[in-house]
Structure formats: C-alpha cells, structure tokens
Length: 387
Ligand SMILES: Cc1ncc(COP(=O)(O)O)c(C=O)c1O
Image (spheres, rainbow, N blue to C red):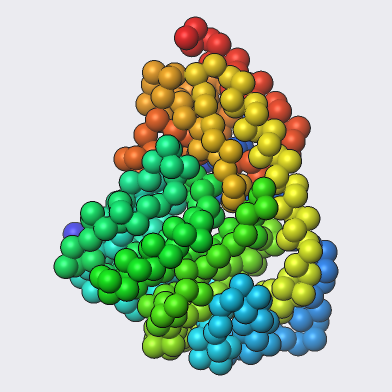
C-alpha cells in the first residue's frame, strides 16, 4: 500500500532528549537532570485565576490573537524592557513559546531559505525549520567566549539565501546570556544583510549575578524585522498550561494570527486568564529565580570539584553545560553510562549540534537534595574511570 506520509513527515524524528527519557524508564530510581522543565509548581494565585476563569464561564473560544486583556498586559510588561508593541496588532498569544516559533517559521520560510542557528542549540529549532522547508545553518559558539553568539561568526555563514537568524538568550542548552553590545553588533548585521530575527526569550526572567535582560527588538529599526518569542512556561512554572506569545513586526504577526485561526483557533481560555495573573505577580518569578540561583551555585561548584569535568558558571536559564572532554569518551557514551551505571539522567551535548560534542547538558530544575545526590553519583562514576 506504500505510505500516505509526505516527505516532511517521514523526516520527522524523535529528539534525543525524549529518546533519553524513554531509555531512562528502564532505570527506576534515576535522578532526572535531563529535563528542561521547572520542578516547582505554578504559583497558587495563578492556579486560582485559571480555575476562577473556568467557574465564571470563560470556557469559550477567544479572539485568535488571544484575549485583549492579556495582550495589553504583555504590552505593558514588554514596555518595561523598552519594547514598544501595540496590543491590538503586534502581539499574538500562542500555545507556549513553541507555538510562537512554529507560526513565525511557517509564515516566513520558503523552501531553500537558510536559517542561521547557533550550535549548540535547543534541537527543536532544527526540526521546525526543516519541516517548513528551511535549511538550518549552524553557527558555532565557543566555551572560550562563554558560549555567546558572536556577530563575526554569524557573518561568515551568511549567503544570498540567508533569511532568518534565530537567537535564544538566555540560552538552552548553554545558559549563556547575550550582552547588550552583542545584540547591537547582531542587529547591525541583521540590517546590513536584511535578515529577519526570531528572538526566543523564554528564559528571560531566569537571570543571575545582576544580569539584565535586553531584547534585540528594542534596538533602533529592529521592530519590523523581529519576532520576539516568550512564554509563561519557564518563568512561572507553567509548562502544562501551554501559553506563550509572539510580538513584533505587524505584517508577520498578522499572518501568524490568520494561521492560528486555521490551526488551533486560540490558546485555552483559562490558561490565558491564568497568564494575566502571572504578569500581576512578577515577584513569584523572582522568587523562583532565587531558588534556581542557589541550585546553580551548588551544581557548578560540585561539578568543578570532580576530576575530568569543568563547568562555566552560566548567567541565565536553568542549565549548565559542563566540559567532559577529559573523560576520554563521547558525550553520548558518558550520558549513557551515567544513566546505566550511576542512575543520573543527563543529555549528551552532541544532541544539540556538532559543536556540543564533549559537553553534557545538565538541568538544575531539581531539588538541592537530588542535585547533591546526583553529584555524588557522578563523582563515583568518574572515579571508576580511573583517570
Ligand atoms: C529555548 C526554548 N524555547 C522554547 C521552548 C518552548 O517552551 P514552551 O513551548 O513550553 O513555552 C523551550 C522549551 O524547552 C526552550 O528551551
């Protein structure tokens, strides 16, 4: 009978992170430092707001772009970051950041368009771009520069087919945060080569050591060539509510809204009301960030005390990207052995691109107690390697 699937579907593969979790099911008692999701609960008042919305009969479709009260709140929230967007025409509420990324890529990419993506990078970018017919072009980032994406490395890979540049700051998997000067240099490049910038800022509240979040969209003449993506998932521990947003170029947002009408109509109404409450309780996000900071300090210090492992102290998100090259094995071998022999789930750096080889992605969205135990297990594993 053959297959009814098209070529794009046939090329869809399970990501390496999910594959690791499937494997981990055979190792009960493992400590999960692989997952990119808060272990904390959604703040109580946000849960209440979602439940109240349901009780009050807010159980119907909303505007395709999302309820206007939420778009207004988002607009106010962004204006505090010097981002000036009109809630009526320049914001769309989406099914998480992922929904925003997918819509943005679907309405902008034509077959063969090249998309500049840093390497290593959260792998969904690569599969989303390919599904839309685009061609991912990896731009390496280097540990020596704190894994920050450098304008000169982007410029070397620009061709006449380059159309989109994807940014992700704070970053998954490295935890790197782009500085204001990095963004200025990158924005100049975007203007020089007429690139659209999709800036994924879903970890924007997870910043440490006094770092401030800057968005490239706030720089001169960038709004019409930028789509800012953000989400409630990480900042407010709301992954299951599936609510995020995109803001920026009116022409692109307009088409994203029309596509959303055709795909999912709108985001779950109760989730949108919960998100309004989240933006009213920003101090909850700061409290969570402080919890992650303590865990980051513990894990960085612990990893650096283990022979064969060295780890930068990232300024954002909830991941560390330790260098394991001295262990003398591939990152996939180390991740597999850590699971099988030590009962610790991590993700091999190579899953995030060729440049990630020699590193592991470790998430510290887990309790201090579990992190301590995981560090003990990792140390025991490395000692058995008798380096
Ligand atoms: C860099 C990055 N962007 C976007 C997302 C999407 O998150 P959500 O769709 O839950 O907002 C994730 C989730 O892991 C992520 O790591």
